[in-house]
Image (cartoon, rainbow, N blue to C red; front, top):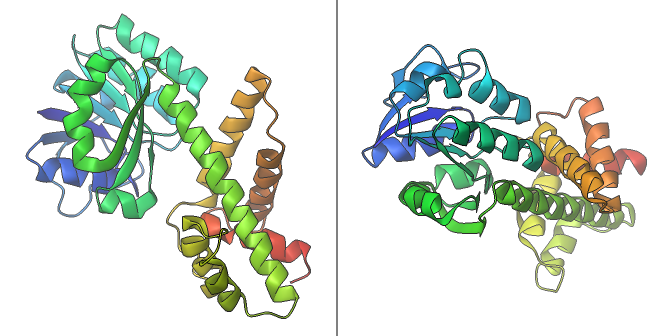
Length: 288
């Protein structure tokens, strides 16, 4: 299959590499990131040129405006889209804008799935991503062999475009609030004079045990904040969740509080640190 893969960053590069290793032919266009070492792909001048030769186009971009530019810009995917081409957006963006992008792709003769992922850089490298999909069963079935190359837990959340993005934002709310809870708990333990490493070890055997306590708790204790998932990207995701919540009339009070803590981390120069560095905001508020 000829795949146009646009967005070869921290997540996109290993995802594209898995597709190429499975025998698919890739084309791309470069912006911020160079062509990763070991990835065989034809580099074209813009998204329009990528679309002209692609059976499937996969996007893995940072934010909603990036997807809009790549799809609908002056030399965007829409300009070169062939009838029947399947566009799969695996970025995490606005569910509302996703519906608009899907309509534009369909009007140009293509099909559209929103398929954001969870699992971070480790999941992308290990081809173990969770993939949450919105779109028709027909398009999902067509894309499933590709998803199975990149991920393990793959779910068609709903047949409406935007369902995948909504699921991903729900995921980001849960992860963020769990990180904030672990940060509070370990800071509390340290201020009380306990060894936070031993507290974490004890909690891992009880009802408080979680993947966040296991992985991010260890990072907080070891001060290892090299990014698996950057604070600025999680901050962006919570902004999308809050915006969607407002449009739906849904109260998200703890999401708002956690986003403010991420804002504080960004203001202290931690925007490109791992989201486990959220603990620094709690520590500063606690006088540490």
